Length: 290
Image 1 (cartoon, rainbow, N blue to C red):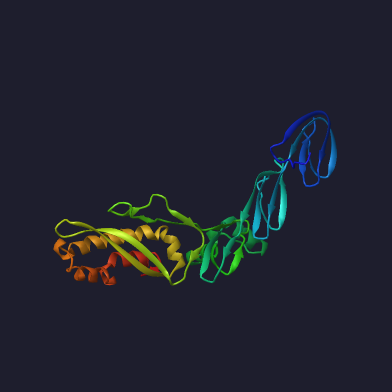
Image 2: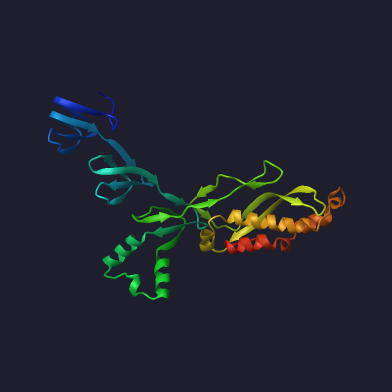
């Protein structure tokens, strides 16, 4: 037929043949359970056998194929490449896009598994044993398992390398009392440009128990990529600091100051960065400067 068959096509053949077209591949098990892989074009005659056509995976130049062998080995095939997913040889095959860092303001954090790092050192004739390394040198060894990759480049991870995932909260303003969104934003590429901004609404309770909502936009720079990664969720920590500052600020404001024509003093307090000490400390601890 003219249709290309893939992993969904499996047949038990008592006696007969199958044509494997150019562009197709199949795995065949004979009546003794012996396996062979055939890449077309080919005509195969079978006797009490099972034939399963194989799914073709293709990686272009900006992709790679993740191959998990049944032996336990993991392989990355950088594109352009193709592979037929043979269940007798592989547990899983997946095509993954590389990470495009478009400018020198884009970066990722890459971790390397200790076993992979130790394998690389063994290949260089270096013995790696924490039992024989002073504490200070162990810290250096741990640091060697992590690196920052900056753009512009197309990053393809090697086997044993894992790219750090940032998981930051967002703030919703669907209600009067803004809260953190339940679903976090997950991303791998961190933009370290100096034009970042954080637009946030937050509640303020005045000294006489009146509730109002303020809307501010903070500009910030990323000063330490390591601290940003260690903070896990900088936005959640900054928002907690902002809420604490809002409580402190609200205690100094009376509702009558919010009436028309009397808001200048309150606005001045909101525009003064020094009034947001908890927010500033949370940002600094997370590697950012407001």
